[in-house]
Image (tube, rainbow, N blue to C red):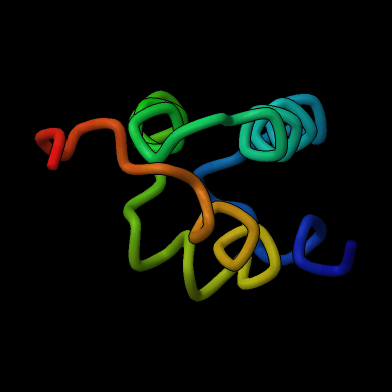
Length: 69
């Protein structure tokens, strides 16, 4: 949980930070993850660098933006 307390420039308050974490943990697709990143104005590269455990968690999510095979 140390990641959550890192230098949060984009996630200004504890409430926003908690909402970000909860949203990421509940996301069921990469598209939902992207919506959350956009809503909190967190670039993908920053997300991967600052929240590596969450990034690993969302890596296994389906990419519902990809065309069906």
